Amino acid sequence: MIRHSITVGDRTRHYEYVAPTTSSPRAPLLLALHGTTQRATTLQSFSGRTLDALADRIGADLVYLDGHRRAWNDARRRATSAAQRANIDDVGFVGAVVERFDRPTIAVGYSNGGQLLHRVLRERPGLLTGAALIAAGLPVDDDFTLVGSMPDSIPVLLFHGTADPIVPYEGGVTRVLGRSKGSVQSARATAQSYASDAKPRVTRTDAIERADWSSVRLVTQVGTGHIVPNRVTAPAPRFVGPSHSDLDTGEEIEEFFGLG
Image (cartoon, rainbow, N blue to C red; front, side, top):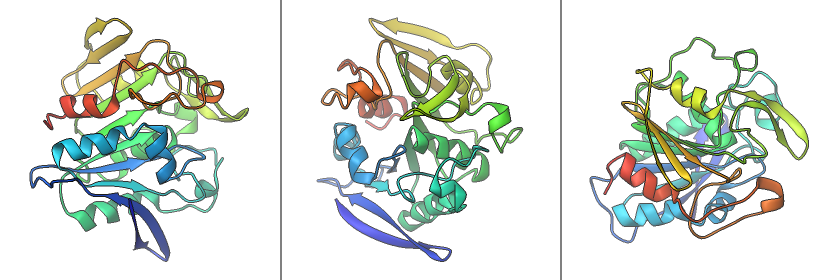
């Protein structure tokens, strides 16, 4: 990883760049957004480097962005992070990095990073060509500043574990270290908000269920917690819940977006 900086407004922001062994001119930029309490390097290890492996397989540049004091200024009404209270321009940060690389971009957001993507997809249509949201339920209307704003019509892939102790799969109050971060809709309702058709086609293999709309997929991993699915790590089960090794985020992204 190579640390880079970029100026957004009057702030210097930072991101970590990972180059593939062999670059492909057809590969998109992969952009990763960490969760609350994490940094770019934390997400890389927490996720078992699944995005690094994907980027190397397809010859893509990969960037992990660093939030302000380990959080993002998402579109939730309750200001529970320093990034929200300081009204940090994180949408501008994402846009500036995408414009620096000047290529089609697939953004991957875990937890609070996924919450930022809910905002980006409504405030910057046309910026991204695809998005993957992991354990990031859409805020309920009472806690969402962008109610009524339509998201960008791009392919969206969502992941959620049914035993998530932080962002409940069926919706409800989210909690980090015992503190509420607001309430979210269910994983299915979140996915449906991005779909143009009413009913998905549902397939199930062992403990993995995929609900597919025309350009939206919700991957449900039965019995897992607040994790980035991968085959390598099982981080902090007492905090984020259990992990299984039967699903890999990078592989699912590669298949869904047709990157192979």
